[in-house]
Amino acid sequence: MASFPNECVDAIITDPPYPEIDRDYGRLSEPEWHELMRAVVGQVRRVLKPSGSAVFILQPNSEHVGRMRPWLFEFLAWTSREWNLVQDVWWWNVSAPPTGSCQRKNGLMRPSVKACVWLGSPKCYRNQDAVLWTPSESMAALKRESRALRVSPSGLSVRPGRIADIVAERGGVTPYNLLPIANSNSVTSGGAKGHGAATPEVLCDWWVRYITRPGDIVLDPFFGSGTVGAAAVKAGRAVVGIEQHAPYLEMARQTLITAEARRGE
Image 1 (tube, rainbow, N blue to C red):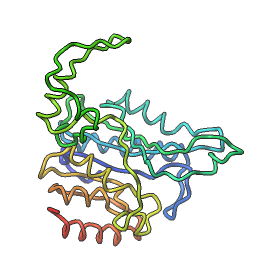
Image 2: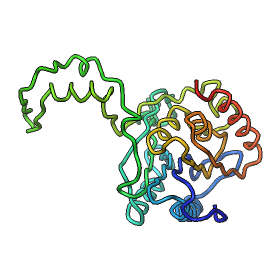
Image 3: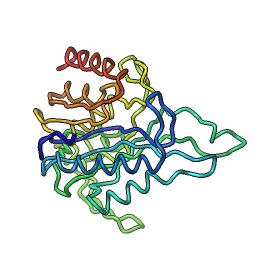
């Protein structure tokens, strides 16, 4: 990234390596990870256009059962202070399998949530209409003629009819900041191709549609198996990927070839 000109990309969407995890490309200690990410974030801020934003997909991990590592929360804190956290957003992998920590003898809950650390200007580009959710049955059943103001015990006031009008007008409902997307390890996923920590294409596609326009340039500085690139290509965006682990390069190339063939589906 250091060779890129200033303000040359519209968005960064990436799933970096996490510290203290053994992968075929090595292992980073927490101090090494922070040093790397400070350098990366510095370059990201430089190459982003003023209206652009960056999303870092990160999952907390533990030192041992009952003791979480602090690196993710430190990353959230210093990027919030030194740059700007647009909104806290979380990906919920609804298909996450049980781990050793949630065995009966340990009694912890199933780890299934990753942070989507969304950084940029408070006024960075986002298109909410591109990521609206399908209305629930209860939302779809709201009567549009119900104009009475209803006040809940907490003091929240709503007009159900007005809500129904807006949902019908926009064709969907505002998404929550918790994205329930299964990491299904399908035949098109990086995991199925041999990548040990692949991100689901559905999640990448959601962010591409949300924070970029057709024709925009999307950068992934930890390109891996190329899933972000596939989502960008299929959505009509240009993509730039950076990857230093040689075995992933051919994997990413094949991913992009397949994405280009599927473009417009």
